Image (tube, rainbow, N blue to C red; front, side, top):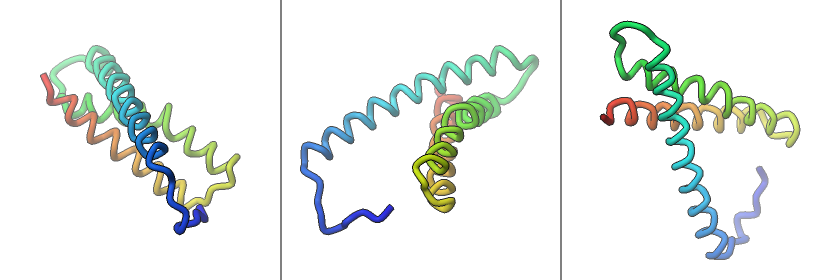
Length: 105
């Protein structure tokens, strides 16, 4: 991304970024929990709660994160390597949260 590593951001910008990231992660976990419940209600029979979590995480990634990552690559001229790093990160982060939420009862 060609950042200048000699230039340090101000402390206030770092705190603001961390607070906003925390709020965003809470919102993502809340939406993911609701999405996983929708999968639980939609799939008949005895199915593993981990499967519900996986499906909720997968479709949240597929519908919300992957399109944004593709748009960044297309419109912001980001590299395919950066796209892959970001989209795999988003997928794995959602799967970890979904796995925790699926076991949390």
